[in-house]
Length: 364
Image (cartoon, rainbow, N blue to C red; front, side, top):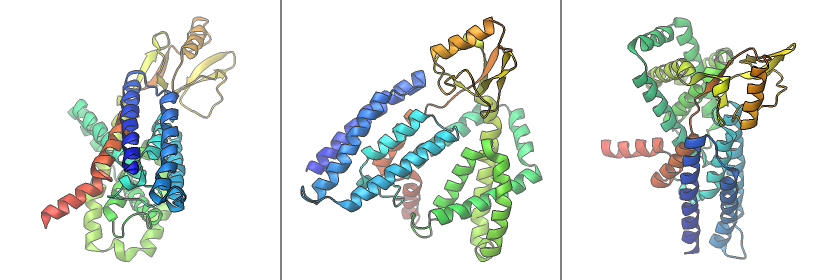
């Protein structure tokens, strides 16, 4: 009874947190820390209280607490990694960690990932994002643009390196998730490979291509029996075609569809800069490199009113040699995270595994 009450309390918190952060992120590109902190404290409290009640007030379920703690640490690492690679903002990472604490482990069933069950939330969040991106790009681009991208994708060298990257990603993820996913769950590994390459290819394409060559050769040498089987080749070709389509269009078209140039005098708080301001002698200029020293200490991920005043002053004084900044049209992740959590609760797991099980039942 008390366990159900705690879950109901957490669920109400999820609804309130999701509604507030989704509205705020969509409107201002910001997530207030107070919403996250209060919800996180509630999640931590209930995740300590819940196993205590389940095992009795004088007994603490150490296995539950250990799994909860490991899950939270991995959620923190995953959130930081996605922020580091500029896939989402710091606030989105903190929100993901909060949801990881608010959802009890008993919520996860389909596609359960041992030690990191909240990976389900991540999967249920990123899959709809990629589908939306691909659909939006497909609808808003002209036939000439699609043909140009398709022509570029069909370059033999490009296809060859993408093939090696997919082979390598499959193999690496199969090792990493060997003890975390059900035995023989190759589809999830393949879809995770597509998801990972789609997220990283635009920014780290060269590095991925270079690293994939020795890994793919090693796999061919050690795992040739699997790779030469008819079932593997058939599934691989279908999924590789999907990878080429998704990565090609999202990384190629997204590079100019989701960036915009805005004049310095028209900047507004909350914008995310794709460029940095660096000093050259007595003047300042823009740079695409994020590694160069920034003496202005601007918050490029979320421009403030003070940041804009600094830029306007430099421009009026003639010290800033560019009158425009490249601004990212960022995706508000808070609504997608909220939807990912609700999907997780609704189907008790990730939508990919759930859909596959439902389809297999109907096909029998």
